[in-house]
Amino acid sequence: MEHPHEVTLPAGAIEVPPSSRWRRLPAIAGAVGVGALALSFALGRSDGPQLYHSYLVAYLFGLSLALGGLFFVLLQYATRAGWSVVVRRLAEHVMATLPLFALLWLPIGLWGFDDVFHHWAHPPPDDPVLAWKEPYLNPGAFYVRAAVYFAVWTLLAVWFWRRSRRQDEEREPAITRRLQSLSAPALILFGLTLTYAAIDWIMSLDPHWFSTIFGVYVFAGSVVAILAFLILVALSLRGSGLLDGVLTWEHFHDLGKLLFAFVVFWAYIAFSQFMLIWYANIPEETEWFIHRWHHGWQYASIFLAAGHFGLPFLFLLPQEVKRSRAGLTFAASWLLFMHYVDLYWLVMPSLHHEHFHVDLLDLTCLIGVVSLVFAVFAYLLVRGKLVPVGDPRLAESMALEVL
Image (cartoon, rainbow, N blue to C red):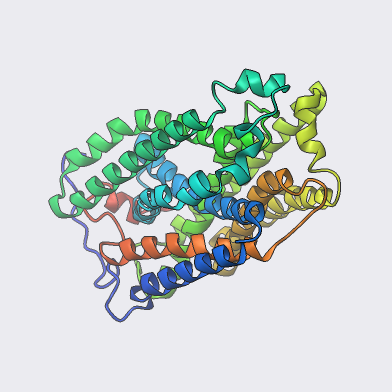
């Protein structure tokens, strides 16, 4: 680690050329995102609760990708991983979209607050549970905590992203050592803020319900999502002739194994949460699952269990799938879809607990938020190196061989 290894990178493999379609994506995605959100707010003017619940699901989907990217970067530095260096820059660009989410949060926190969080924002005077939770669940504390979340996420994302980019020019190993030393405390801040944000923005939709493992459940889904996204973007870049000779099937194999591992981890946390609540049989806890097991929501629950665990578990087991372009494309695309289903299952029964409901606003809000996030991601991607060329472990990463 004292001196960076000199690496000869293939010409044209680590920068997006001017003629690449990736150069056009930021403008296209940005226009689609603005148009889709404008359409969403136009269609939802007469139905605020539906609009802002649909927007919340889409927002959480995009935010989970960005937070997953932050976790991936912090984890690689904390574990001093060498294999993942050629993949890490993609995750850095995803986490660098986090400042955007402070802006995208405004429709929820300002205009849609009463439509989404009315259960505890205006509690009935004779509800002892909400009266007991009032010191935490009140608008003032809610906004203060949100400001803290965005400040921490933005600080961590921008700080790590800028120093990684600076290392491209300076080729200084001390930057890596500095980032490694700060990654562990950063992971603690990440875990705390993600957990409390999950409580504030998802669990509080049913303010009588609580689960001490809920933050871990949301975290597990976020990691599945970012791994799936990284696989799809990396495959697309390779298909465009970029990263040739840099990103190999050895890296895809490792990403596939990580994806498989976190699919299992998500299922473990999901089952643990369900089993403990079912066994305790406390009314305040079981009602949350009852809303997801009646009036059509039971089919969504079964589909979630089968689609987020059963199918991908069996599909990703063979080694050949994790080294196949078609296999990884299907698995990653499917799991991103199931991640949206998971978030929909978490949020929507609080609005439509008497019947299962899908709305056009779900689609337009999702397209709007995801397109804007992807526009920022693609903009950052095309303006710099596709891999951290100054990282002292780059040669080790390029020489990866899965035994």
